[in-house]
Image (tube, rainbow, N blue to C red; front, side, top):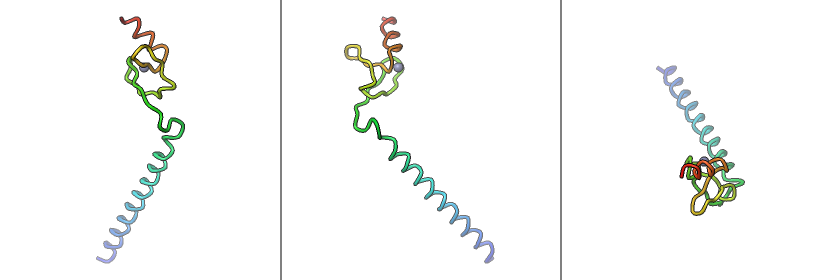
Length: 78
Ligand SMILES: [Zn+2]
């Protein structure tokens, strides 16, 4: 009985350690992500729906596009 309890505790300990490790990794990824385009407004491509930073997006009147190619495609579609 004592051995079983030992392995149960060991298993829980490993699980908790793994969860803490994963949470730390996700926190690092989340902390790294906003650098570069932090606080910058995002606009949605009118053609494919991709969200791009406003400085990288191409405007066509009231509409925004992720690339020149998509802007042209939407113009041709009209
Ligand atoms: Zn697009």
